[in-house]
Amino acid sequence: MGKTFGLDKAQMGIIATAGFWTYALSVIVNGPLADRIGGRRAILIGAVGSLILNLTIGLLFLNGWTTKIIVGMSLLYAVNMYFQSFGALSVVKVNAAWFHVRERGVFGGIFGSMISAGYFLAISIGGWILAHFHWTLVFLIPAGAMGLMGLVDFFLVRDRPSQAGHADFPTGDASSGDDTPIDWGYLVRKVFSHPVILTIACAEFCTGFVRQGLLLYFTEFLGEVHHVQKGTGTFWWAGTGITLGGIAGGLLCGFLSDRLFQSRRPPVAFIFYLGQVVALSALGFAPSAAAAAFLVGLSCMFIFGVHGMLSGTASMDFGGRKAAATAAGMLDGIQYIASGLTGFGLGWILKTYGWDGTPFTEGYEPQNALVWVLCMIPFSVGGALFMTRLWHAHPSRHGGH
Image 1: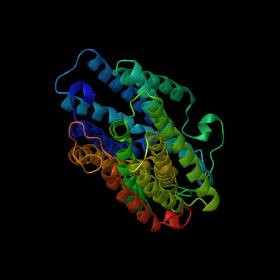
Image 2 (image 1 turned 30 degrees about the vertical axis):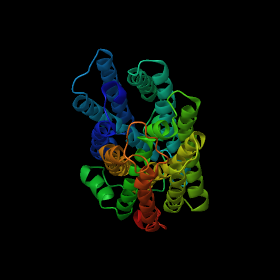
Image 3 (image 1 turned 180 degrees about the horizontal axis):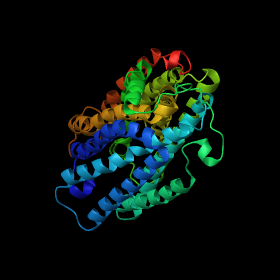
Image 4 (image 1 turned 90 degrees about the vertical axis):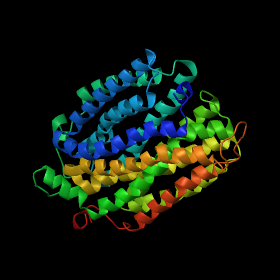
């Protein structure tokens, strides 16, 4: 899109920020809504809404839309991201009733794997579509996929075990033994004044900047620093590395949490934040295209491991079955506020200072990506420091504090 309409990193970043910040606000509002209407209804709303918006965007470009692209696309992408915000909330809400605290670390790994698989579709399959077909199909094909999954969700997803013919059971989280009716006041008190959730939210702000800082610009990093083009084998392996790394990180993070730390999430998250620092440092000075592709995946292993553990698992633990979506919405919302800074903010830095501190000029080839990784590493360090404050936090102790 940037090449088609002559948009630079900062201009494309405006569109990204519009979507990220809309998502951030929407997920905070829609979390309590999902807790009240149930995860099944929430994911159906999200699937239908995103289907319509992606179909609209693709058809507009296919029919020759060329004017006011930044304003128009920012608006459409923002509305799309409103509906996208129902996705993680609904998954966390449904699974909070189906998994005990002792099992949720592993579930967090599965949650992270699901997100990683989505990035594989977006990046590797999307890159293949861009290399072989008109670029508008990266909107139209996902619209069809969401329609298909909406049907699957309608027929197969149930909010509670009792709705699928099984017995409901106590999950051992912050809602256990709590018979308070679910209303807006309960959800606000349960989540927005909870000291553990507030600290995790600060850590997720750090996660959001690192995660989107990497994912938003790694394709340009590979192309401009290592001359890797979309549709090539190396690019495909980088996209696949994001998926495999994310799956490995999520599963490993969950296994370590449940087996070695008695279902405590912060110690594992601390280790993985430090892993981000090491992997990103190496990525900035990757000596070859192959090494860069590998290190993108390795970085994602540590990033997605933390993301699944905190947004997907800790939100259920400390929000409890009753407020799981609200907690997930708060954590995801804070994360996407930081993600918005990677749009126009990090985009402007890279446009102004280049990858290695040398502004872009005709024919110049950057030697490393020091500026890029130095913008992300402090946030990984910050996330690790926040986790040290929650080292012994467990939802079954003193109401989750």
